[in-house]
Image (cartoon, rainbow, N blue to C red; front, side):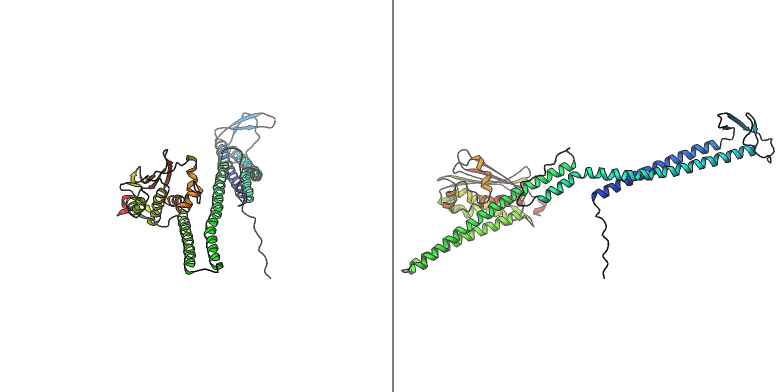
Length: 415
């Protein structure tokens, strides 16, 4: 039969603080007692070694002073109760000194015993006071623990809201409140993303099912009608593939980077613009570039996707005979990419919303131009993964200017 081992009490912070307070009190009390004892011993020795004269104070209050007389016989029995103002022999002086030393030692022993008892009693009192003080100090921590346990994914709107002085514990509570705020925003964004992604994926699936059902239900179906039905299914499948790829790119950007390599923004922008010249000409847009040297560290494929999304966004949401400007440069320790386009007027209060997944300025605008509503959100995720900052400014005459500032790469990274 296995005998269960006794469980020791949990070493809480309160117990450790109590022991710390008691230990510090005991240590300081012991040091004070030792110092007092040393001072008292030196004071008594100074009195005993004074052999020039001896003063005896009797119980009746009379005082007698004696001086040693070396002429007395050493065999004379010392009289420790001589008459006033008499002369002592050396034996009497030695006997008086021994008696004083014995009295002093007895007093020191009594002093040590009583002081040790008082120190033990005060140590016990200090432990009790330390327990109370530690409990009062840790009360906000218990409040934080209890409140945090009650918060879950369903009630992230709750906050600790600690009251009291602006000390480290209140700072901890405020930090947890800030964390809960960010978590709540992240959960809400995730819920919106899942709902929107489900809707976007459900639409082409429903279209495919409808096309197939209609084709199968047609008794007079021909090769041409079936071919048309298959082409429509393939188009829906292509839309699904684009959406899934965009979601994977978004997830990859939000996950962060494992490795960073040197990337020249000017070269990436040049390659992207070469593949978009035909599209710009078809839309009647004038393309202006100013590609100065700008280098950073990151994932070349993700940065290329960022440039592609910005350029495609500027091409898609433009006006006839509009303009598209792309520039790269290095300034203030940052590799800067700027994409500017003409287009419809964008309200200033709607700019930040466009960088959220599946958020569109106009519901029909993206549908007609083949957009997924993920372009700018992917740009935001990739920029965040690279430690870059994005600033978007609507132009008064229409269109937007989007500036992405990457941390500039050190020259050693290119060796």
